[in-house]
Image (cartoon, rainbow, N blue to C red):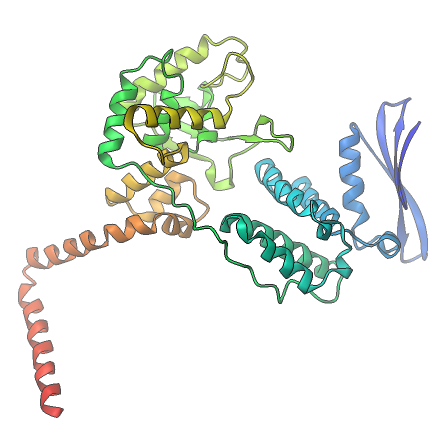
Length: 406
């Protein structure tokens, strides 16, 4: 029997049953004694996750009193609990774990939560001003939620994050640029003239440009997600990365709202049908992926992005466009066409409409005057010109009265 000890608890391997067993002490308030409990798992990884989570529960004060709680261990325990109770997706789990790994590289990450001061936290945040604002937001949010959880569970009586100010990045926020209509037309014409053998990701780019998919969503599509009869495309999953950086199929989309059904434009049907035929003849394609490489299980998102950059630079002299820009291009065209923001939100798979409004602020501002012109035109068409003139005369009279008073 192999044994992995962890203070008041340990993990053992049962050779007879080929299972991993977690044994731990839990303090029983009624009997005022420690009770030995156990739980079995198929893998060691599952056992270690469970051990970490139960160690920091309020019901186990002995472990906490004797050992304290390292900051990042509590972060991991909270995250594992959310994952095990289906509160976060695999994609969110991996992304949050990457943030925790960043914190863990610093002494703060291994310090006990009841010994961490506001000054230490502020110094940690200030050090990271060289990172982007989005990364700073993630660090700040992770620290804030962890200490709030510690307060709620009774581990702490004060929250050291209350006085910590989130610094602004030294970098300017990078704005994702959309293609102009002229650029989009030129790139589309180019892609449609190319064979798959000469431009293997051309249909990925077309789907992103004209349907607004994230690149991971496009690469996760299977032939089963395509309903040609009703001209519908179902988005259910996305490709993501595991903690080792390997490309994997996520269990869901980036967020719950990413799951959506989109109408396929008529002008994209031939491209999608072309890709479906390729997928059907693809070797080792058990998942019926629409975009399946020959040499590995999944297409790497970075490869698709880098190939796009090379293509645009070589043939169009464009150097500031990525695969995400193609999705952004679709959202921009939707707004330019006069589509309501809430509809754009649904098509793009945003969590709520404020994300859509914030993402496309500059586009909305650009077309604000056009919308005002529509209102003015409506006034004229509905013979309301007289009312407008009366308002103008009233304003002029008010100006005259003010001059007389002064």
